[in-house]
Image (cartoon, rainbow, N blue to C red; front, side):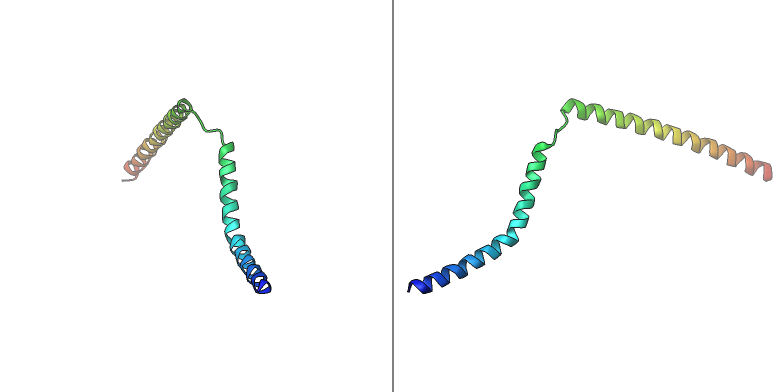
Amino acid sequence: MSEEKKVQNSQLDKKKKKKAKGSGKIGKWFREMRSELKKVVWPSRKQIINNSLVAIVVIVIFAVVVWGFDQLANQAISALISLGG
């Protein structure tokens, strides 16, 4: 009887090991991800607001510059068309 239990236990151990191997990779990945996220230095609210404002200002300035070039190009094309037509 004890021999049968040993065989059954070893078979169960093998099944558990196989199952643990597959789920172990995913579990390891989550543990490593959590560990890495603990190392991240998150910006303060003040830094987020400051960085957002800087980004918005740069975008607005860039939009104005592109709009200006577009207006110049539009006038140049209009002048060329009026010369030809």
